[in-house]
Image (spheres, helix red, strand yellow):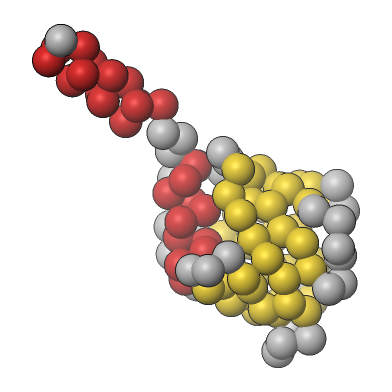
Length: 107
């Protein structure tokens, strides 16, 4: 029984997506989203809220596997975008969602 519990715990640790690291970095440090040469500073709070464009855009966020899902006053329908794994503060990379492509810089 003890081996079964240890094996289950080890499997659960392996099953945790590595992507959570990237999304943890994004939601902890914030990010700069660049869309068509426009830089948008996005700040996240631990209670699942975010702000952008100096508070003009407010909304909610959640993590779903390798995706960051958001709703906002500017886009009320939930949008989920997949993020690459193993990114950390200071990294820059591209993502593509239903609205097109954007460059992300983790602060």
